[in-house]
Every structure is written in structure tokens, then in C-alpha cells.
Image (cartoon, rainbow, N blue to C red; front, top):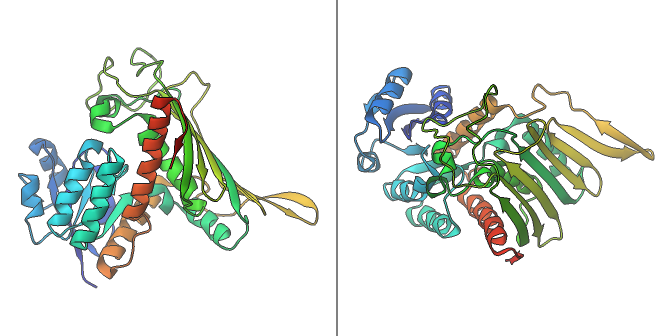
Length: 352
């Protein structure tokens, strides 16, 4: 089988998952890396035995040896880099979110079709073991018609600061960083219905809480306790054309007792919880029963899911098959995120 020659663009923390996953796949050649910090790029090249450190993005785009790129940069660069890489004849794996706006997302989709290359969005939860198991039950009709889903990803203290907390670089806070994952996984499992309307709220009350002591939390490399222009909390109700609805709330910081993540789906024949761990709810012989699948990973298995994501991308590039997380889905999720921010800003329902 032929190999896929890859360059990773951006050497931040998430890039390690890309490097490791490509190295673990026998059909990938991890050939190059580019980062605006040459020093950081060289450190990663040495760590992973990467042959080529590129001096510019143009050098990456113009290198005919490179088949595909992984984009691990700030959100505000996703669209420009994706479009340029596609134009340069490269397949693209871009970290979520696809872009900063719907307009940018549509331009990326246009470029995918124009240059006849493949783009996969980094919706890593689609590739988790518990997701794949639940989807197999859903596909076999065990939940019936899913008409309601509910998802929460609440951090009591978890604003990473740095570029994550700068709206100009990130496009938003917990909604675009965390909400993108749980909205996508619900929408994906619900059958990807078309959005009808959105109501939503965002709150800017607590800041990044860099003053808090004696409790550790993830901080970006450029963390600055006084820097924050993104929301603390967002919530929304998304209604779909088929009548189904999705209720979601996400936070970087909130006065809650502990961090929590919950993903629940409710159908006409049964229900399911994907997080905090997989369980199915059904009814047999006039009795409600809880079904606990016997699998190794009942909750989100990040490293394994990431490997599955990269493996799937490589397979799609080499075989020409459509990705599990195609550009069209990235566009639809961007519409939902933008719709929530718009509804919150205008304080009214947004109708599609």
C-alpha cells in the first residue's frame, strides 16, 4: 500500500497527538513540520525524528513531496491555511473548529470542491470507542427516533488563558472550544438533522480567575491572568427541522462544585448516556432496564480516539473515500456556533 507524506503545521500542545498518531500508522510518513517559532518546530522535529523543518507556509504549500497537512494552529488561521493547502494540492486535516465564521467555512468548502482534495475536521469524539458502539446501536434502531439530546461540559476553573482567551485569535470561549465537541457528537448521533432555530445566551462574569490558588488547571503557553475577552459560560437550545431539539451548556469557569461532562440522547424506543460513561436505557416485558455494554472504554478514550481519527484520515486520503467528519459537517457545526453567538448578542431567536 502506498504511503501518505504528511507535514504538521503548528507545534502547540495538540500537535503531539498528531505526531504520535502518524508515527503509529505504517501508511504515513511524517516528513515535515512548520511553526512560526522556528525553535519550537526544531524541538518537535528532534523529538519525533522529523526530516524537514519548513521556513514558511509557502514552502509547505509548494512542496510536491507533501500529500497532506495537519493544521494545529490558532482558530483565526484555520481558513487561510486550509484554503492555501488545498490550492497547493494537499489533503487537509484541520483541528476544530473549522473556521471563525460561516463565511470562512463556506470558502473552505468551496476550495475542497474546486481543488478536488479531501478535508477532514478534527471532531475527535466521533472516533471514540463509546461513540462507535452507541452509533451501532442507533443505526440498528435500538433507540428509535431520537427527538431530544442534552449535553453539558462544565469546568469550574478551566479558562486556559493565552490565545484561548483572546476572541480575536479563538473566535470565542468555551462554546467554540468545548461546545463544538459536544454539539457535534449529539448532532452526529441524532442523524445530522437540519437546524431550524436557535436561542442562546453567553455570560461574561468571572473572567479567567487567574487569582485562584491551590487548585491546578490547564494554562496555555501564553497564559496571562489579566487577559480575557471570551465568555465564561454559554447555553443554547437548538431546534431542528425534524422536530428534535438539543439543549447544551458549556463553561470555562463557573461556581459549581466540580467539573462535569454529560451527553444524553432520548429516543422513541430507548435512551442513552454517552458521558460520563456509556449506558443504554430500554424497555422490555413492561420493565425499564439499564444496559451496560461490556467494553474497555465506557468513557471518552482520548488517545485511542485520536489514533482512530488519524488512521481514518490516512485511509480516506489513500482510498479516496469520504471522511467520517467531512467539510460539510464542519460548515453545519459552524452555523450552529455562529447562531448561538448571534442569538446571545441580539437576545432573540435566530431562524434558519
